[in-house]
Image (cartoon, rainbow, N blue to C red):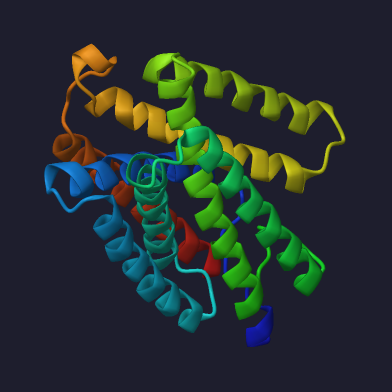
Length: 249
């Protein structure tokens, strides 16, 4: 197989969504751990993990293929950056989650438009070139930040709480699953809707585990929750790595 035709991204199957939710929940608890518990602040946390994202992405692009460990390192970095940037926009810049969500939605739509203009495709299951993969990760970064802002808007501004927000998002995700199997709506459109919604699901679930009882959480702490989801993520990625290697044999 010519090198240029080697796929750089994983298939979008059930295991993908399971690992994504684990990674996004770790992104929520991990960003809170660095921002508040370790007292780095939102701006410093954003810069640290944005730098790590760039380093991991450079490694990922150099491989020119799909490697589960490196792929999910890049993805988890986008999740932590997204959480920290969303909190920075709301709490440091004072934009609020509603305005922040509108700005982030605009950034995502512009990225998708530029991606389609350049590549004539928005495929998320078959990426074979570096430019397409850069658009892919850029869109993921916007979407993860947007998902965090949307989840916090539901939990805080809309007043439904963390558990209520997770329940609402779960029902919306269930609706998207039905639409996938029962309608002819574009799978690309449904993917991006599901991608954005699984981010606030992970965010609200992470907040539900870590926030104090008087804030509607279980008060488990960001360190313990982060370690738990890190172990969970490593286990899922290891399984994905074994399955991927077996498929190549």
